[in-house]
Length: 319
Image 1 (spheres, rainbow, N blue to C red):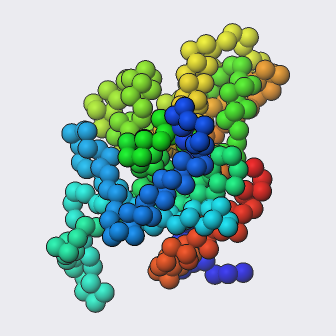
Image 2 (cartoon, rainbow, N blue to C red):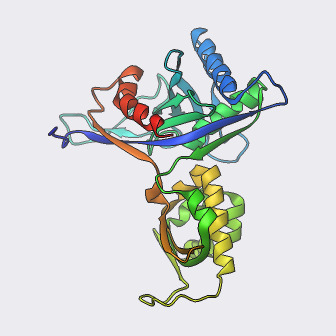
């Protein structure tokens, strides 16, 4: 067995990607995707790049993104990409190998950047993204925003872009079969709630926001119990408000996966239409592949792709 103690666990998650074309029969979702990547490749060939500040319209710290790697592998019908996030704010420090002190990194030559690798398979009538999870780098919401910006604003060939999370546990099953919420457990860092969709935040989490601002805890845990613990007799009363909230949250999280990243725990126990008791643990439901690698030895885009290539092949066969 391989010794993994010196290796870094890298997580990969999977998403469906779809572009909606304007009323033009010549475009499909996949053809739009290829035009977007071709545009990026052409810009790079000219020595240029497509830089986007995701927070340009907000009074907020900038979030500048650009595609560092973009390559269409026509034979495999795959695209190899990496998206870079230019680090804003406080400059990180560096510890010299032989000294116990910190020195400031020299940023006079350029900007500090975090890079997230991802790969797109377009063998089906929809595309599938395999995304490296990098807590410091671009997330899936950044990837979606970047591709949408080029397709809609620059090339003007798509009116909408959607990314949906692929999960091991079926959100669709829960949405279709949920009859009555029995228990709901949510754990969240109050400071993260600002990243939640405005409508969801305002509708369901205003009180938690206020409590967080007042008490300033690191975490808040909400547990709503509609069933007495240990009681095997279920109430016939429908918990309409809880049912509505859970269905709305699941539908939004499915369409906008970045909402899931706000929570540290989101567990729903519910009764389905056949009277069975089911549990949906949303955060543990992401389809995930973990690879243990020596990150210092993997420097090229091709090497990063080879880490997940076989697993990506096997995953695509299950769809």
